[in-house]
Structure formats: C-alpha cells, structure tokens
Amino acid sequence: MGRAPCCDKASVKRGPWSPEEDAQLRSYVQSHGIGGNWITLPQRAGLNRCGKSCRLRWLNYLRPDIKHGGYTEQEDQIICSLYNSIGSRWSIIASKLPGRTDNDVKNYWNTKLKKKAAMCVQPRCAGGAFSAAPATPPGAHSQCTFAQPALSPASSSVTSSSGDACFATTMYPPAPQLIRFDAPAPAPAPVPQTELAPVPPPATVTAYGPSWASATEAGGVPLDDDVFLTELAGGEQLFPYGDLFTGFAGQPDKPDKATFELSASYFPNMAEMWGTACNTLT
DNA sequence: AACTTACTCAACCGCAGCCTG
DNA sequence: GCAGGCTGCGGTTGAGTAAGT
Image 1 (cartoon, rainbow, N blue to C red):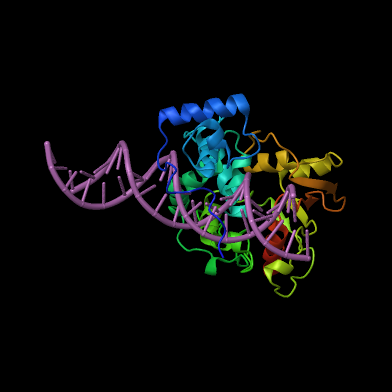
Image 2 (image 1 turned 90 degrees about the vertical axis):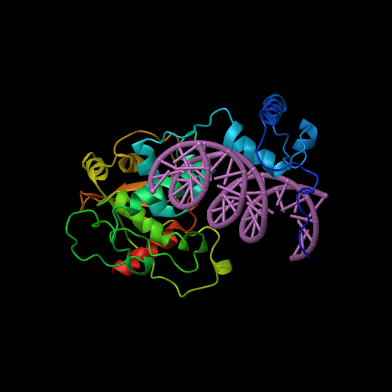
C-alpha cells in the first residue's frame, strides 16, 4: 500500500514557473510566511501548484538572499574539500556557503567542478577506497591517496560518490598535511545500518597544520570550525557558523598537534568514515 | 543558415526521517 | 507503539540555450 500523493498531479500545474506565479508566491510568503504547511500553501496563496513545487521554487529561486552563478575560487575549494570529507551532503555543504542552495551547489558540482577536478586525475584511488599512501612524488596526483575516506558499504549516502570524492581530493585535498584521524576504536564487525547508533560518539581527531601548531604554541587557543574551514578555504573567513568541532585540547608533548572532538551531530557518520579510513592506514 | 551536439539549471521524483495524534 | 502526514534531501530528468560543424 503506497502512501497518498502530496497532491493531485493531474490537476496542478507543472513545469516552469511564470513571472506571475513567482510574484504571487513571493508576495504571499513575504506577507504571510509559510504558515507552517507547504501542502496547503498553494491553496492559501491562490496558486495551482503542488506544495512541494512551491517549497522548491521558494527555497531555490525566490528567497531574497539567493546568489546565482559566479562561484569564487574559495567557494570551489570549500565545495571540493567538504565533498571529499562528507560526500554528497549538499545541504550541509550549501549551509557553509551563504546565499547558495543545495540544488545550486549540486548542479555546480555535477556540471563544472566534477569535470574540473577530473581533468587532473589519472588513476582513481584503488577501488574508490582509501589506500595506504606510498611516497607519492609531488604533483597533480599526490593527494589522491592521502585522505580519501574509506567508505563503508553500509554508508549508502556516500558510497556512490567515492570516485568523485577522489577527484575532489586531488583538486582540493581536505587540508593536506592537516588532519590525521586517530581511530576511536577498532572497526566493529559490519552491522546492519539500522543497528548503528543514531548518533555515534565523537571521534578523536588529531590535526596538523599551521593553525593548530600556532594554537598549541600559544598555550591552547580554542579552535572551532571557523578556523578549520578557514584552513580549507586558504585563509578566507567565510563561515558565519561555528560549532563543527568542539573540545579542543593541546598536546604538550606534540607541539604540532592538537586533538579535537568531532561533532557527530553535524556529520553523523563522519566518525565512522574517518575511523575506517584510519584503520585502513594502520 | 541549418543542423547537431554539449551544456546548464530549474524542476520533478521518490525515499527517509521526523512529528503528531 | 504505531500509522499517517509532512518536510527535507539527494538523484535524475528534460527543456532551453550555446557552441561547434
């Protein structure tokens, strides 16, 4: 027994929105708000459209703060670095790019960045998986084996993107020489996805790099994701939000390192991904 | 100028998860 | 605890346009 459709597709208009419909939706949302229910919004706004269609139109096109096109090099770096780290979680990636929508970022990746990244790649990571890195000579492909997460087959949301992630790693490695992951525990025997804890415990992440080194030298300056992502972005301060990483602690005996707790609530299976990657390394 | 191919991006589809009664 | 409804998300499609021949 299938679920009821959200609307009668035969009776609602589909396809491209007209300027009149745009104006009608914009006017209604700006004066009344969404009203807590997209399904009934078209009726209230006098639009012969599916609620889902209205929602998509508003979120991806009509919202006043939307930016279209004109991606900067910093944005490219952020997209590729985050894609490499978390896969195709476009909503999370878009949330780090003010004015960008998940649909926009997804389209941009699929039509431009993916090709751009692929141009400088010859071999893919073996089987799309993380491989222990032999000393790769400096050059276009040296990063491919560095931090490609080994994606568990159970991690369906990211498995299909492993090859692209490899490309992205090559173009914009996830902060090269910046991060190493200390696996929190040996990888457990494979379990069905449904048996995984909904929110895994934070992973301990050991990070390398100028910011971390200077932080520890300074006696343990608290770091947050603004610093982390600023590293990824090549020094640009682009991130208005700040709670990706928590629990900074310097390591007195290792002045070039600092330990983080990775917020599992942000990227629920990131700890799993990276923990697996580290296990593959060691 | 006409046709074909490649590209872009808005929109649709279906699923998963959350919420509520 | 369960079922149904709604929202959000990621993958895919297809119309429109640009570029190439």
